[in-house]
Length: 394
Image (tube, rainbow, N blue to C red; front, top):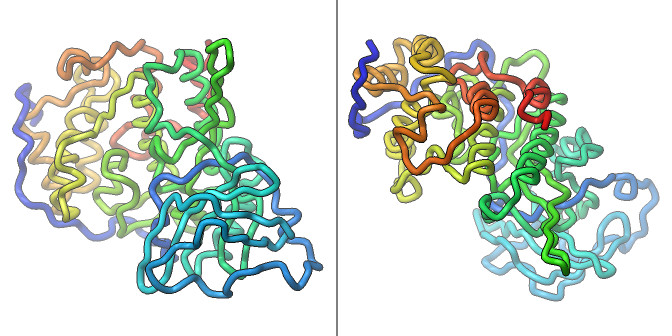
């Protein structure tokens, strides 16, 4: 079945299969608000939920602004807790279905914040979700709310891990960044919250350069919970949809099959590789320009199968065989079989050989990310287990 020749990447058209999961999660997920918000420090909602607030708690309309214009610079917004925020910059903005959705940088008493519009109908859900993990130092949660405008307020962070240059970050600092971000993911998963869009630009921190040219990286946090949701105890996951970004998406998400917290782990493994060796495993030209899901899948999925189907050791194909068997009889399963049949899946330890100039990765790190990026979700390590991996012992 698996020969030793690399098959060409162009494959026949693909049609997404239906659900193979026995129980689906019915709740619809809000549209993504923005691709790269700022990340704040953790905080509490205690002030925002005080029972007796003044009548002048807001100075803006009750509904999201209709039309093509974002909030003007200099706009003063009063929150439920009584804080006043002045808009300094429009960071992200779009107008969809006559509703303005913006992400703004604002200042209150000399401190920078980020204020985000929340899609109508999702505000209460996101407030509750933020409350579940508000005490985790490595998950960005709201520190204030503006319910009349359906906005959430977050402290400002100045660097995301996609914009960062991994080569300029010392190894010890990079390992600390990966560990702290993984701690944030573990905090989410402890509450059965699936993030759905783990990627470098959704993990931010504070970068500080001191006068002596030394560098400090602190307040690492997972952000962008707008697409996250808590999986009910009686449901195995969510199915029938594709989540995340093409470069960081799990194979089961490409299949629109059952997705749970293990799907985040797969994406996190790709994130860890990006931070540690500055290598985006699934980065392929043309993905962003492909207008249709099927076209994106034909570009990314063959590389995912070849580069991540080999497991940690030479010739370890049991994982990918199990993955394909899970989707047997579906168009997606047939597609994966066609890609892999007659191809040589490549263990991560051999990337340097087959994909130069991929940097060297020490065996402990290879073992960690191999356990995170198993093709079969049930084979993947959990976030808590990953935090105990020997690679973090140094």
